[in-house]
Length: 124
View: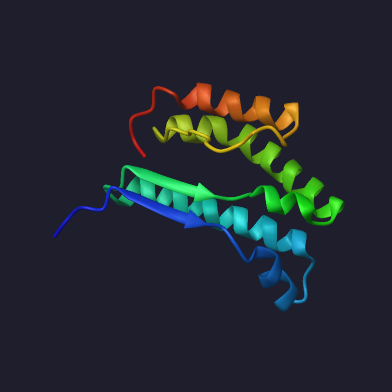
């Protein structure tokens, strides 16, 4: 049997999940981010998978309500900042791909810092 070296996940449905639970969409995004982090660490610690690609935000998402987009951008900013040490300690290398032009300088600088801090990691 062939070894799986790369898994891709499209993150979708967090807002719908929250609404079904009687919660606001932002609660779904927060819970989704927590689950995503568990998936990342589980993959890094318990599998031989080399690459985990995550599709978490598309340019279409910018068409959502401004309050929701602002919440997501703030969630990303906090996540990138708090994750730097964890990912470095776990030997997880972070590489962002895709278009960065619509993102704010604040988010982009956090992304670059996270990439820089984990550039020498050799694990997931």
